[in-house]
Length: 215
Picture 1 (cartoon, rainbow, N blue to C red):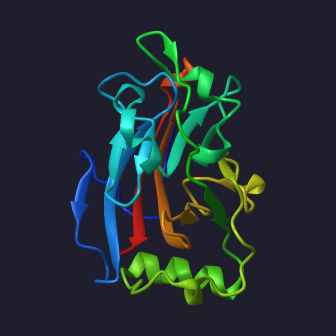
Picture 2 (picture 1 turned 60 degrees about the vertical axis):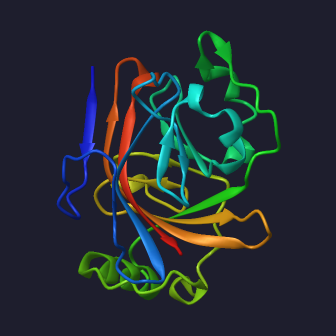
């Protein structure tokens, strides 16, 4: 049975990945990115380079391994997650290109995530600005004293389960992301989860989202 969960926070457009001008010159925006879990085909993608909005499948990684910022994965229980590339040691074997399991050739990037759960002044303000298209910067000021992001987040459609590591497509659909940079330091990004589909063959499950990232 296919389980489909769609965001009702903002209108969702059915488009292939589109690059658009962000809400401010200080940030870039990628719209309608679709990532498929570990059984992606040549027509799908499980990996994202946030700096450019490029989504890659396992057979297209090659020398771009060093650039990937997040990985999509769905376990046998149908739990869809975003992983930090640096935290994928236990799942790399499940990504295969022409039958061969993925064995990273380098040390992968560290990316951290924090689901923004409404109910506090800081988080509510971020949701209001996002919906109004008025996010002008993603520097640390916008996130205030929120708890620092951790190494992964997962999807659960039950709003009662939402927390800093569990998102949904209804009330807790924004995810704060911190991405390590090659020269040191990090960049902040913001993901808006729009749609999650859990397939009966869980490795073919998918997620659609928009992303803002510091320029």
